Length: 200
Image (cartoon, rainbow, N blue to C red; front, side):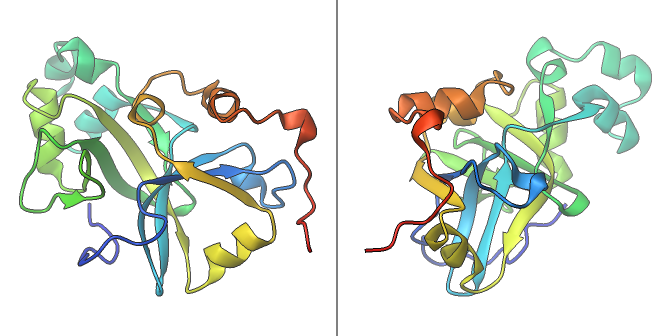
């Protein structure tokens, strides 16, 4: 697992923000999606969809990667057993990423904010499997990526609503209702959202 464009020297404007798909989202892959932005710069942006789950279970993923055998997977500690593998996005779906609380760090961990890191090496999966991983973690396969200026243009065209990321929404297990709950927490009623961009 590698982090695209891993060298990160400063925080981008949208780092540690949620992107919430607007009702008029034309790309079906992102309909009703909530994306956590991990990196944003003039060169582009990278984020993980956090409210789409995969059919693959975390113990099965560990077996596929050869970290555990099937007998060991059965005996996983319950926090690890209950991790839902997310569909992180349409780009490079064989690549895995773990967003996690900052109480666990290895050399390859990339700080996103003061409390959230991104790690994309199998070390963190091994640590989680034996109960020595981060207190909070989210596993995703694939990611969402944008080229230079692309995301800013999509926001200007009313494709996305942005807001600061809240840990209780980032790591909670209520995946199916995350989109509606996040909008409600912002005081946004879907019935009143327009899919047209406003122009003064």
